[in-house]
Amino acid sequence: MTAQIISGREIAEAIRAELAEEVRELKESHGMVPGLATVLVGEDPASQMYVGMKNKAGAKLGIHSRQISLPAGTTQDELMGVVAGLNAAPEIHGILVQLPLPEHIDEAAIIEAIDPMKDVDGFHPINVGRMSTDSGTFFASCTPAGIIEMLLRSGHDPAGKQVVVVGRSNIVGRPLASLLLRKGRGGNATVTVAHSRTRDLAAVTRSAEILVVAMGRPESITGDMVAPGAVVIDVGTNRVEDPESEKGYRVCGDVLFDEVVQVASAISPVPGGVGPMTITMLLSNTVKAARLALERGGGGDA
Ligand code: NDP
Image: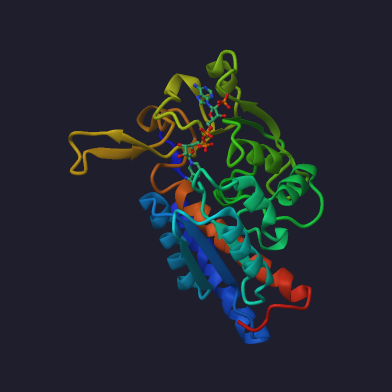
């Protein structure tokens, strides 16, 4: 058997087209332009690249992007001031502070300072709490939300299925398990979360009808660890040395693709899988934040 390829790139494109339409409608009917502010502290090249990609993708959809770049020496108080300013700005509906922050900054305090209704990254404890308790309005963190969309839009609704998530980080594994457990759309799964202390990982992964892997360990899930016919989502994004490549490295997932593609019924590739979905869900959260602001009667004058 050779698996169906779940293309995150194609699904992301389809969602972005829908979002562009929604942005156009917001502008035409309500005079509102969704606004996203990204805050970057320091000059880490990877962070600069991510922020640049987010702004560019937003601008393509007609989202108003404001990029704030601050020097590495920015103090906690100064950053708090910037966040407070963005919280108060009516034309800004979503705020993203690029992580990681320099060591002298208390990251948790900054995240908690963001208005939860503008927390489009979904990391504020109010959003995490509402997602975990399946209550109220919240922003789901982008990578897990992207994985759920990928499953739904490729015809693999997790409802009623045995889903195994490998990894329990606060940005992928844990929030994904919360979303899968919800009673609504994309939820109602039976969820097992595995981690580095799991005994006999292979036995656990083989029990999955849907297997999501977010370990940060290159090509660790081999063909014999996957049940025939399972659906596999590979979140891992790893750079491994490759003397044959021009750049000297290649990007791979946590799943040994060439083996697992022979066993699974569907699999997401790396690159071109979960990656493009993450930014798309950030844009989706920004449009949602703008809509919510509109319902509350504000923010229509960007
Ligand atoms: P973390 O390092 O924060 O977490 C890794 C998790 O995997 C931990 O829970 C760890 O267990 C578990 N783990 C590690 N080794 C093993 C093992 N041998 N057996 C079982 N479990 C293991 O990583 P992240 O969640 O931040 O990211 C995971 C991967 O996903 C990375 O490759 C990252 O680059 C990628 N990623 C991709 C994104 C995208 O948009 N495409 C977005 C975010 C992440 P324990 O808790 O016990 O240590």
